[in-house]
Amino acid sequence: MKLDIIHAKILGALQSNARISNTHIAQQVGISSPAVAERIKKMEDSGVISAYFAKVNHRALGHGIRALITVRAFMGRLKPFLHKIKTYDEVVNCYRITGNENIVMEVVIKDQTHLEQFIDELISYGETKTQIILSDVVTSQPLKPV
Image (tube, rainbow, N blue to C red; front, side):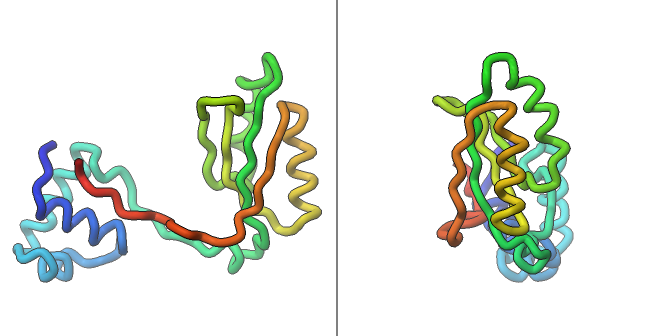
């Protein structure tokens, strides 16, 4: 799908606030609300827009620690790990990556004891490295068409 400047503005508005009304977007981009709805539908149908979601504050839900954990899977343990990782509630995002490690994941953890227990479960699958996230520098940066 070829995107023009109006599509880009609509995408920017939706990425900043997925609950923004079509009327409000129309006012921002200078087209009618039905035209906004039509463009959004076309972007959804073409796969440009794949989902809408709420960003949730992990601390407000009792998760005091957010961390990045990389795993370098032991020989023969990657496939079982890929199956098992989907069952952990602590895992917010998980990516298979290139390089020395096979996996990087973002997790939310209640406290240090919980983090230690979680890492203890992971080490049967491979070597782990953990970095605790102190603060967000850039989050959910809106993507622009290239």
